[in-house]
Length: 488
Ligand code: BES
Ligand code: MN
Ligand code: ZN
Image 1 (tube, helix red, strand yellow):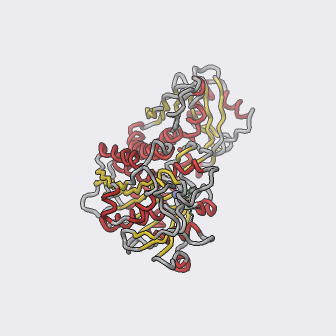
Image 2: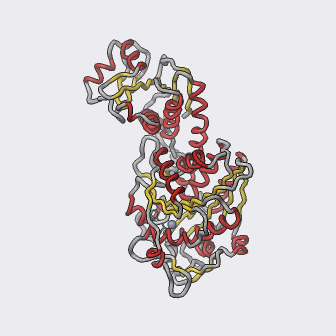
Image 3: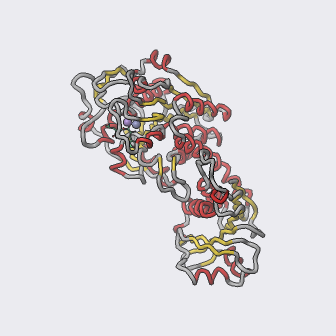
């Protein structure tokens, strides 16, 4: 589906979306439609429970006196409820309602300013996303029919300018969703590295390190995780240089393309979900696409550690001791606590090579994070209050909220080991925190934040701007973080 923006005008055909506020207060375009149709909207509202409240939607089929096939009346609520995210939800809900309806043309008649109109367009784009490439037998009636969503607004040129950047960020979100939704027989370390390489056409410099190079660097923690797999582990470095001589900002992602648990094998039910255990890497890759796509004035580094965690005769065992690139040794007590091992080396590599202003890592790191926060917040663990506050604010603005979790010496002690510098699991309690403490042992004195995205990388339900499947969570948040604070 294509998203277009044009000058405000009621369309002759197709579906028209118009707005109404609380108390059934029709917007000017809605009032015009109501008049033309001899009061069809007023009658429809009276016949229903539609009150114009935020999130409500009323569908009026083939109103008399007009050539429109339907009119959707979108509830906007009170004036002070109208913000960017509410506008996006209108765009996304309308598109989702009509995507497979048989309709081909959808027009939003927008009585709002250019920026709000751009958010409707953004919502329409994000909500129309599908990952359906493996459906080959769908009946025509079940296939998407909607071809174009047109945002019709006064001052279309300004709306187009406002949408241009969002459109590019949306492309980054889509890239992440695609990668996360792909099964693990298609996306494994080498093919995921190949996906990173496609960013070269946007001006991203991409380097791929294989096992030989990583062994030379001493990345025993990352390599240990991948040693049971037939697929070679990879480390990908992506660089977008749009910021002149400024110090780079750095993003590091856990890319476990499939997590069986290794020798500490996971139970069967639900194991298929572990195809999205590369979600952190997926977000970093999509973010790099967004930054390069909109030519962000920043120097950004994206590093992803790509491994497959498999049980086999070459797999690492519980009790093994590995040496990380930092020189610190790790006793592996559970081969299923593998994400932190991958990140340990990826974080160390990133800070030693690039000396960034800050590092943010993303990982589907612990089931314990899902137990703590569920699916509506990611956890943030950080050694820096300013970076944390900026992440909290960016998340709120983009609808990808994060909640701060604690770090501290008492938690850190829980991963001391009898035989090595640390062990890779804590105990029964505070599983998400001990995982974060582990990562912190690989961070030197620089601002760092760890986002545990286990609860938010995948969605079974779907929302207006986030269809079910890979969510692309974090691309918007981090793109916003960069735009608000780190572009020159
Ligand atoms: N990838 C998992 C965490 C996960 C679980 C993400 C469910 C998304 C959904 C991670 O590698 C893992 O297995 N963590 C273990 C750690 C434990 C062995 C200390 C966990 O959370 O159970
Ligand atoms: Mn695991
Ligand atoms: Zn994992």
